[in-house]
Image (tube, rainbow, N blue to C red; front, top):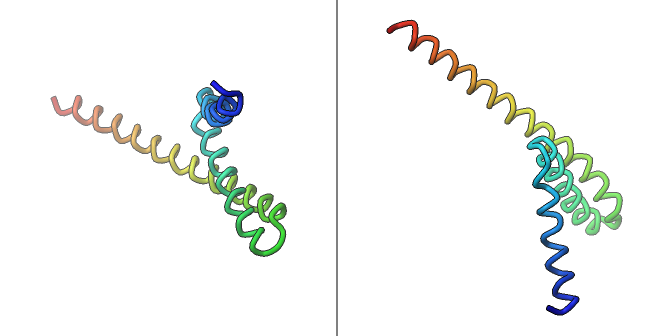
Length: 94
């Protein structure tokens, strides 16, 4: 395998492998930050300052990722409460 091809494979595989040991909260925060930075850099490049756009986008993406994580954790908690209530009601009627 040529060194350049090996480098390309490593560039793609390493970030994916690094996310394997992250908690769902960390993964969502990273995804939001990365997406926000990319979008901010794109908009910033159009406006004339890609670095500032990336920084603002990363901050907004991080906030969005953490809000999404909070929503998903709340949703899972409500689901678990419903399962427990259903099990309690079911065992009480038998």
